[in-house]
Image 1 (cartoon, rainbow, N blue to C red):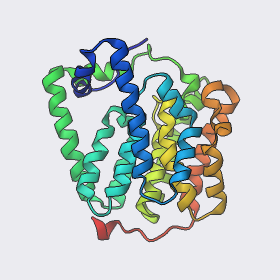
Image 2: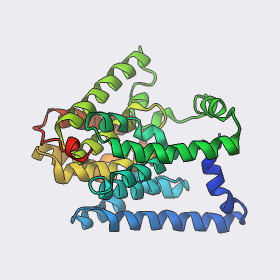
Image 3: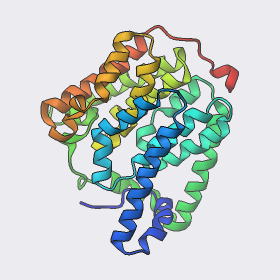
Image 4: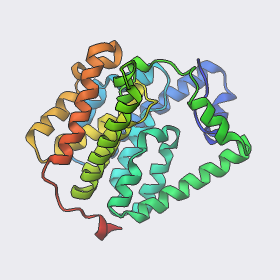
Length: 294
């Protein structure tokens, strides 16, 4: 079941490591991942850096990423840079956002934020980076790589639905599972849209990360690292005290133990994330600065 589930351009980036002995390249990869986490803490745009430290140290998802040699730690770095640059240098923020392409499914709802907050320069930067990656992918993988990649991602050889922290895992095996997943997915996407219309860019970004994790049908415990920046933004920026408290609880290992155990604990995590997305849509919103910054 071990298959390369990244676009061809990513294979080009990894080529230098592939030329090294396995243990050497593995050590370098883990060192780079740790450096990405440290950079995330240092570049976090707000003053609450000790909270960022303990959120990373507590994260079951982040430890899962290291245990499996995943690349999810880099998503933390890219998220911190986007949050740091989106106001003053939105074009650069969009370019950095495109670096999340290896896990593009987790950012599926970001276009909702861009469109509803009219952050067109952010979109231009993203399209610039995505265009360069597509060009390299076609050069490296040939003209048929998109269809080959689609067949791989939809292959039944990809296991582990029971530990997926999303709606697909929540309704797996239930009667009318596909219908339930679509209905709840539309509701979550709608909640993200409401947050994007009514709230600041940071709260909207948090909602898109949580919503993106929920609505995609391919996510594993390590992918839940996106909850670290999302829940930190909610914990220090949400209007409701109850929502801030819920974000704190969801950052603790107790709440995320379901990522290891599965079963009822992970169902509680999934439902809690749905509840957070809904609560963000109903909380009093702040003025949307998107038009002024577009």
